[in-house]
Image (cartoon, rainbow, N blue to C red; front, side, top):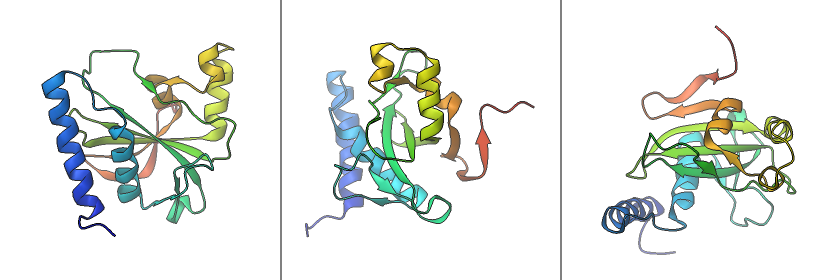
Length: 168
């Protein structure tokens, strides 16, 4: 066991990643997903998997009991910039849903969206047969359309699932 708590280390990683981007103009590689996994587990009561080889990052509890989830991150530095993409989904592996943690420029969580495997596979199939779709690549905008908003910075856990696809 280390001398620092994971919470303290994640806090330092946020600070360093923010300062690195402000200094260099580039994001610090590899850190956003580690932060997102920690935040999703803490905010949604998930258990992170020690072994990442099964194709999912966390297991759910409560209303997500037994669900196997991939966790993806996207830091939004410029709201005006379109075409943001989420990381490649592991389509060939066993998992039940994907959580997308949207973070601000300080690597603080803003929103968490969740989409079930079926919805993601349908969306990729509807989008056609491009190589991107075959690799499990999807835009943040498309993901948010098919997903449900499950957590916000302002309201915390969204009790009543917010569905972006429902009409008035």
